[in-house]
Length: 106
Image 1 (tube, rainbow, N blue to C red):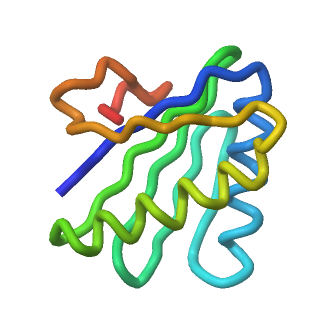
Image 2: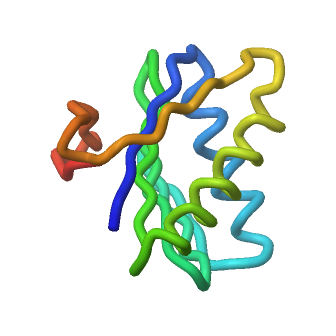
């Protein structure tokens, strides 16, 4: 199962690095250029940034785990970007036009 969300911000790359660095202290995570990833025991999240937007794609084997990934990623982004008050609206990737820079869907 998958869900996507995006957040309009001029600090997208900064938040990408912050999320990957923070999660990388406890789970496998990495970033290269304008994309990153985090692998949790319950699922994973791919992250992409451009000049105006941070894009997220959470995935897991079932809805319960997907909801947990979404909750963890959302709570951390809200904490890191509290001045911008990100309001993530997670949706099915079929409803999203967001794309990673390497043209993988997110």
